[in-house]
Image (cartoon, rainbow, N blue to C red; front, side):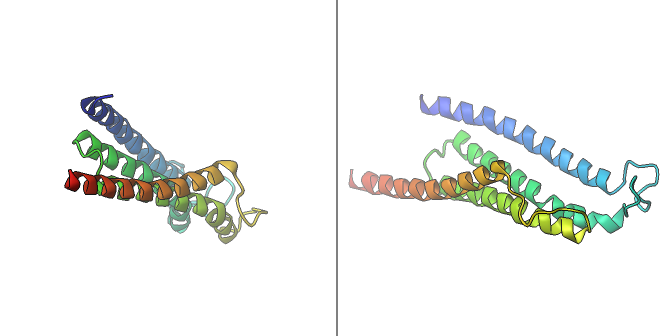
Length: 170
């Protein structure tokens, strides 16, 4: 695969990541608005179908429930930024290593928020949620991938440094 093939592939994938980010953001905003009662007949200040408080009272809690999704969205946006760098021709730079670390950290934080924050928020909302942690294999895999990306970013930065040293020698 040539350098220009990598750049063209990164540009196509960047466009896909941009569309995905816009779609995910719209879904997150619509979900928060729906939970707040924006689409209900009672409006934002009314009550929900089960008599629970809807509207602005619940909005803060719903924003906290959205934290893992927003962290995942930020991770996809960071992937998009790294693809922009590759599309611009910056294939092996320390910036890509930092972006890999950032993606890994965001994925790890999103998984931890889902595992720990969700049950705590359910108890704050006085909803029945019998677990202390939200054990989910997908979130554990996401946490493992996040840690792996953070480790690989260190290897990537080290490889870039070694390449620069070799370039200086020759």
